Amino acid sequence: MHALGVNYLLISNRSWPGGDRYVIRSLFEPFAADVNYIVLEASTEAGMNAATARFAELLKTLGDDAKATATIPPRLRAIGGVQDKWEPRGPGWTSRPAEWATMGDRSVAELVRGVQGQADLPRHAGRQRARLLGHLELHGGRL
Image 1 (spheres, rainbow, N blue to C red):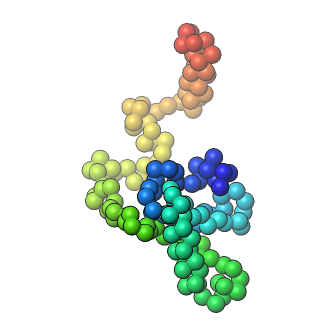
Image 2 (cartoon, rainbow, N blue to C red; image 1 turned 45 degrees about the vertical axis):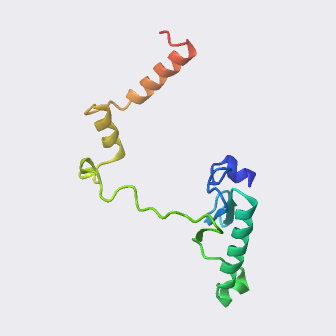
């Protein structure tokens, strides 16, 4: 769990999911090919006990083939809580912002140039800027 946490692959902490809520999810090949993880996460002992009980229920629902080969579906997601229920929320936006209407067919470089307000950047501009920023950091902001 420590290795997952220091690589920002865990989503729980003392505050989230909070109460006796839990999250059960699969992690696809976090460190090595063909090695997947099932993670049970909670903020409290009560949440972890509930997650363990729910995971045991999920294992019972697997088919005979999965039980014979110890195969768990590749995408496993379950959330719950004993007394503290999850508040369902919809997506952040009900529709895309109007300014995004024409951005779907543009490359990342075109989007960045649009944000920077520069029509065309020379190929070496990034290297020059990186050298300048490095120089400024090295000399405390003095040229």
